[in-house]
Length: 250
Image (cartoon, rainbow, N blue to C red; front, side, top):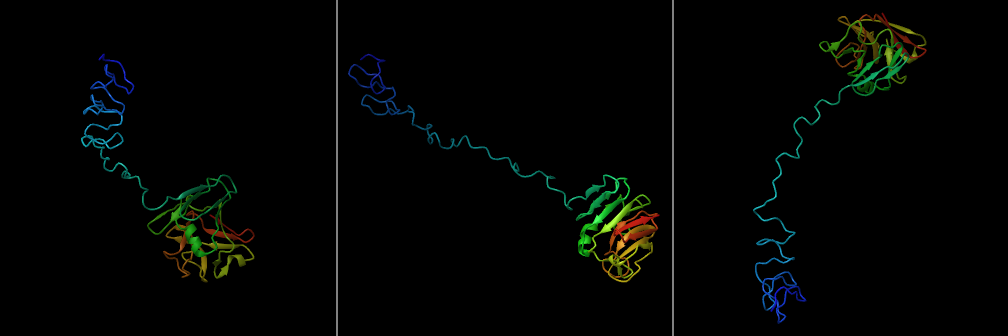
């Protein structure tokens, strides 16, 4: 018959209407003269030769790449350093500012302004320990005989005031400050005056002036007591009964 003439099912027909060999049939494979599939010729529904169908995995000689070891692991040094958060900074912004000592170590400063009040809101000695311990005021701190930063320009000074909550039971010589009806002048000494309770003292520790609170109520200054640094040229503290604050004098 004449080649090249398409038949009704997609293959050229000879003069007798039969399919020619080698040409694709309706189901994707070439047909022989009897209409059967011819081997070796892929049809549209067939897979890759010698392997699974189109949506399967690639042949074994083209494997998926292995992940790079450690690719999803954090690099050394990305974790935060041990030891907790560093101290937060709070600085006065004007004269008569109030700087509040919050929980945990803080770096507090009057910023060079006058009549700045440093305030602690604790109402129990344990709360005061959590707020006051580790604080640095105006660059000064005292954490023990071998761990301090002090001098005539560090710590609470004559331009500063110190205030506590009225419900915190601070005493001096056995009397609560809230029970005093008049101002009290507290001179520096080497130890607490006494009387028990959470005693307030302006202590001279080998020339290092500090404000101390007798946390363990022992009557003597020891490692368990609470401390704020004071300028080393301070000689006395005054409790002002009318506004419930402490001030400091050279």
